[in-house]
Length: 464
Image 1 (tube, rainbow, N blue to C red):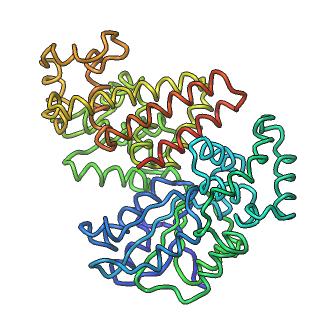
Image 2: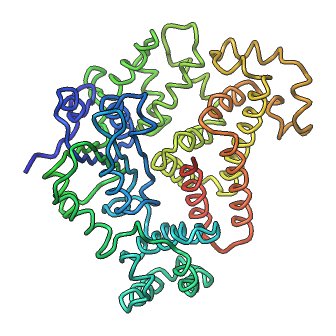
Image 3: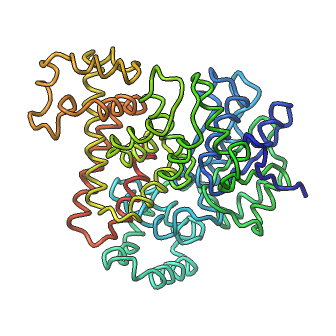
C-alpha cells in the first residue's frame, strides 16, 4: 500500500503538486486535515496544473458534497473532456467520509430547507444521507427505512422539535415527486463509491475529494483511495522555535515577496496571537494589511495595531469572505469560533445582513457606473477618491446612515467593493431573502440558533 503523505516541506508544498508537475497523475485524490487553508491552497495549485484555465467551463466541476449523490459523481467522472486531456471533478465535504463535518442532524435540517424550497429530489437524497440508507429504500417505504427513521428520531429527539420529528410523515408525498434516477440504486453511498473505486477508473478524469477535518484511516474508502490514488493530510502547523523554523511565517514571507514587501517576525506574532494560529485567518489579515500599507515596504507591529483599531468588521469580513469564495469549511469554522467567543447569534446574523446589504448596494452602484473607477484602487487612493464622491450617489441610497453604503467610513466600503465582485446581483438578492428567512427563524422558531446560522451559511455557500 502506498504511504499516505503529510506535508512536511519547509514551504508546505504537497507532494501531489510536485508529482503532477512531473506528469504523475492519479485518478483520485483525498485532501483532508485540520488545516483547511492548506487544503484549499493545494487544490487551487492542482487545478491550475491539471487543466488549462480556458477550458475550466467545460472540464471542471465543483460540487458541494452535501448536495450530490455518488452516482452523479461517477457520471461526471465518466464523461469525456472537451478540448483537453482530462476533466476534474471536485467534491467538497462529501458526507460518506467519517469526519468532523456536518452531523446527520445538520443534514436533516438541510433536507427540511430543501422541502421548503420545493426540491423533492434533493430532500430524498439528503434524508437518505442523514439516515445512512439508500434513497430507494425511503421511496419504497421499506421496513429498513422505517427502522432507520424511528432510530434517528429517538436518538436525536433532544435536538429535534416536535414539528421536525413529525416531518417524516411527508415522505409519501415527497417520494412521489422525487426523481431518483441519479441516486445509488442499491447499497449505501459509501458502498457504491467503493465499488467504483475498485473498478477500472477512467484515465481522462481526476476526482478530488476535500474534507476539512480528520478522516478515519481505518475506513474502507480511505484504504481504497490510498490504494488507487493519493491522500494528502494537512495537520495544524506547529509554531517554530525560530523564524527560520516557523513554516507559517515562511509562507507569509514568500507571499509578501510577491508584493515586494517584508514583515517583521514580531508583527507576524501579533497577527498569530489575534487569529489563534488559524492559517485562513492569518492570510485574511495579511490581505487586509497589504491593502492598508500601500506604499510602505515593510509591515511592522504598529501597522498590525493600527489595523486592529479598524477591525470591528474583521469577523464579518472573514465570514462573508469565506461565503464569497464558497468555502463552506472556512465559513463554518469562523462561525463556530465567533459563537464560541460569546457573540449572540442575533448579532452575528445582523452583522452578516449588514455586510450583504452593503455589498448589494456596492454591486448596484458599480453596475450603474458610479463606483466602477474605485473597484481596482489600492486602499490609500481609494480613501481619497471615496471622500470626493458626489453627494448625488449617496442620495440614491436609504437616508438612514446605518443602511447607506456611502455614509460609512472608508474601510467597510472598501471591503464591500472587494467582496461583491464574487457575487452576481441575483446571488446577493437571493442572499437577502435567505437572511430574512433566517431572521424570522431566529426570532420565532424553536430551532437551535447555532444550527439556524449553520444552515444559513450552508445555503449561502451553495449558491451559484
